[in-house]
Length: 207
Image: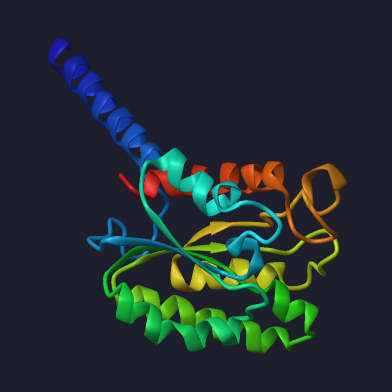
């Protein structure tokens, strides 16, 4: 009887350990853990940091918090198609990406690009980074003045390609004048909020 009790107790302890271990792991993300070298933030003006000092961009804030260098590959006005064209030069400079933040799609919407085209471009960008061993963090940029019709596409792409996913990163920012420098772009406080949301997802992926 005592032996049986000990076995049951041991089994429960093992099961509890497995559960706790699983809870401490990041969700299933392709290429995690990555053996690459460079962290990259690929995006448009939201990544470039229009309207704020370079030290106030979400990239700079996130870099300081995580204690790692992050390449700011944000280009104002860029679309998913434009970012796709930039990839060969980016890979030429940084051939071994470890993790990439992909925050694109806002300008596609503003330019009324077909959402199918945007989704296809995002898929090709994700594939290109994953082929080089990088963990991809896909960031949804819908909400507020943007239509939410593309939100499901971001989620679908994240599932399809097994990326980490940060939904609706502008939630609560677009509609709050105290967090913006204009109708779209965040101010320093707004970028702090974006960094908050990204940090929660990215920090576990660097372990």
